[in-house]
Length: 220
Image 1 (cartoon, rainbow, N blue to C red):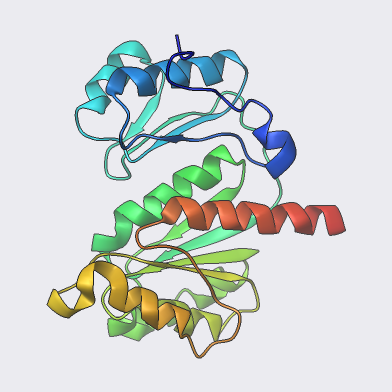
Image 2: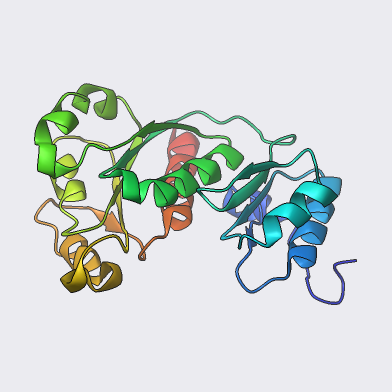
């Protein structure tokens, strides 16, 4: 039972437009599995993030129907997802940034929002980005995931009209300081209006997109 360690928020979707999610770090595998079961029993979409390797076999044993995405460190149950309008382009600078980008995609999926993953289009080979820019422009919002010097979101924001949410990653060499260099570069973007979330926080970027699309739907 969840009562000794969790007080679940079954009404969050009514208030915020997305359900309660499970932050797996710091929880035991058994706690994660139990919370997933309780949310699913209540008819809620289920997403657990930041799973440690030892949690995965427990979830597979206890909830065999759950989807496990090891690279993203997530577990999903989509049965009660309500499809919503809107598309988000999740644009990833390099293959090393994929775990963060995939976390964003999984979060959007549980929110009922279509995500288009566009991987490995960093500025070191700018032609790769330009080859897909028309696809990116069709999205209602863009999540741009990058480490190193974090230039990708600024470039994209200079080429599209949709909201751009920048996600710095901890990918990079010594002076990247675990993503701080990319974070500061994105905060200081020359392109106006770029939203920046915390380092490696693909989940938070997806939630920001969900809130933006919620308001667009109300306005329409």
